Amino acid sequence: MKLSSILGLNARFQLYAFPHNTPRGKSTAASKVFTKKKLNKAGIRTPESYAAFRKPKNIIDFDWGKLPASFAFKPSGGLGGEGIIVVKKRARDGDGWITTQRRRVTIDDLKLHALDILEGAYNDSNIPDVAFFEEYVGRHKAFRKYAYRGTPDIRVVVFNNVPVMAMLRLPTLESKGRANIHQGAIGVGIDIATGITTHAVWHGETIKFKPETKRKLHGIRIPDWTEILKSSVHCQKVLKLGYAGVDVMLHPDKGPMVSEVNSAPGLEIQLANMAGLRKRLDRVEGLKVSSVEQGVQLAKTLFASDFAVRVRAEDEGVKVVDVFEEVKVKSKGGKKVAVRAKLDTGAWRSAIDKTLAKELGLLEKDNVLLTRLVRSAFGRQKRQVIDITFWLKGRRIRTTAGVVNRKRLKNSFIIGRRDLVDFFVVPQRRQRAN
Image (cartoon, rainbow, N blue to C red):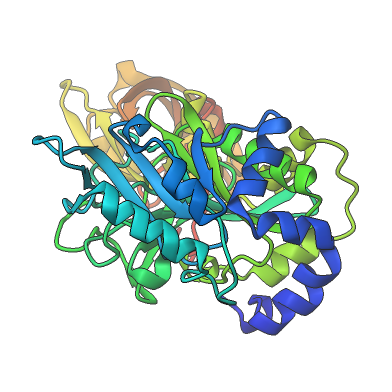
């Protein structure tokens, strides 16, 4: 990751959050309650709201018995996940509820917590706040193996109606089930084109596995990915924020739900993706994006990671292969022999080393189809063309191959593009091999 591509704190405010976000948009985003109302009015799904307290009298008058078995209790202006209580079920004895952290909370506990919220205990300015109850969103089955108790979410940074970067935030034991990076959650980068996770960071360090397990954090496919990106762009347009971070949760049954919108999202997303935001923001600044769909398509085109083409090809039923692969060649006696091959899209016809062909019994008279004169760097030569059958990635290919002298070269079998019609060859950054 180049330093010039990284977005810093000062640049985030001076170049993006301040000049591209309207005062009204920032004011709305600062309140989760106002944000939910605005988004719901526009048809964007958010967790259902049950009640909101603006004054102590609201707390006294509220019928606490109406609360469901599970819910989330939040401050409207809270930051960094502070002040949130997530309840998963009622206590067996009927006295209160059990949180996702297996703590019991009673009505009196919730009343005291509500008063703290109203007094501004969980926002930076300590100004009066609003406390509200909303629907509990559990863990989607795609994340159950990776998240500790709490609900994971997906942060999408959107600029100029184009999603430019995204990450999955996984709660841990340390974060107490909260999907907040600063409290110890794991950040996992997501390829914008495919919705598949790429890299993971925890406490600023790169990790490959969920802590204390062998569960890989890369390669997780995010469900409803295109819908998540569309919701994020739609949020930006509705709130009139040119630069925003949209937090989306995946309800196990109802799909994507927007939980929060930030007018100045954090920058740890760059570490999770091992990529700088600055460069991506520069690429979309000034573009005319007329629709949500266009913004999502632009994102998938501009910010696809190296393996995105590979994934797309596999989704379409095309086998993805590397430049160098082990294939199995059928000998004259019917035996499958492993051979190192080079997949050369620059060559039309396949070719096999003369010594290898002889060892496999493929130069016997009944297997030689013809002998032709060819021009090469060594002048005009006679070259035999033989019938050959081989298997590449489990696919059986019967074709013809020229017999050449490749004894001194690393690859005794060259597969030409004529025999690679159903394959996608991924170029590799390595020393050129013959």
